[in-house]
Every structure is written in C-alpha cells, then in structure tokens.
Length: 243
Image (cartoon, rainbow, N blue to C red; front, side, top):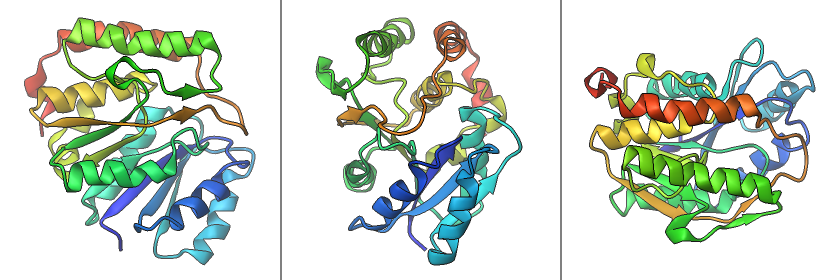
C-alpha cells in the first residue's frame, strides 16, 4: 500500500476516468486512488470496476446514489481513508484540469518542506496560470480568491483550488460533522478551517487546463454558495471545528 491516496469524485466522467487512472499509476511515485462516484448514468463506475481487476491493491471505488455534492463526496472519502494507514491525502479532478505530474510537487511540499496542506495554485503571486477557460470564468475564479483574502484575511492566492494534499493530521483534527458547504465553497471552508486550526499552508504553482472531454459541473448556485459562505466563515465559532 502506498503512503498516499488520491480521492477523485466523479459524475459522468466516462471520457476521462480510465485515462486519468492509468496516467497516475505510471507516475514515478506510487499513489493509490479512491473514486467516489455519485451514481453516474454514463457508466463511469463500471469502467472503474473493470480497472479494479487490473489494479486490485491500489484502485478503490465508493458508489453513492445520486448527485450529492462535491463536499460530501470528499468527506465520505476522508472518512474511508482515515480508517486506513494513508499519511498523505489528495484531492484531484478526473478531467486532467489538474496536471497529474504536479502530484509529486504537492507531496514533496508536505513530505519534505513541512507543509500540512499543499495547494496547487493557479494564481500564485498575482499570476494567472489558466489555459482554455472563457475569460468570464477566469475573472470570476480569480476575484473569488481575491474576495476570500480580503474578507477572511488569509494569505491564500487560490482559495477555491480543488487540487490539494493534506497531511493525515489535518484531516484527523477537523470535525467533519461541522463542515457545512457542499459545492466549491467546500474548498474555501476546508482551507480556512485548516488555517484557523493552526496548520501550515504552502501553495505550489500549477497550470490549470480546462477539460477537453466531458461537461463542467460549475453552476450559478455553486458560485452563490461560495460568495455568501465566505461571510459565514468569518463569524464562525472555530472551537467547534476541532475534533
């Protein structure tokens, strides 16, 4: 068993899922993979099950009934992982928007450089490293992170990033029952919770490339949750968020 596992939530990712799994398993460092599939009607889970026969000790699948949200998918995965001996837990999308080669940089940031939480950042030091996104989406995402920094006073350049590595201790400390958000606000909430609990955070530069295959899950509902959720985070009683 590897010391590291990548949690990948999926919903209708049949075009990408086999390619991303095979790509990760060819990296120089060994990573295990846990897929959390929310009842994809396109057969994503069936593809994963076929690949599990080929990678029985390193590929795992949790199937849920219905589209239950990104945040709840990750928390389900975190609970599963913490029942096992993994020391480094990653979040990554299935669609290659997060460059899999950078998994090793995130790992090293935690393993070798002392970070408790490493973030694959699109906006480090004011630079925008995004390819093939519509300009409106870039502006919305960039200023969402700027908004988080201003309201919450936390020096994270890419607060909505979904490409991260946690040391085990971070997830053991956070009380998942208190995590409230299910969309991309979940990403802000987890980072800010780690920050408020005193964990060290390091950002690693990446180039984010918009998906080529499949359909984005972003919606205005998700954006609104993130916008208003920031104010809720600012006035939260943080003592309740530690196990």
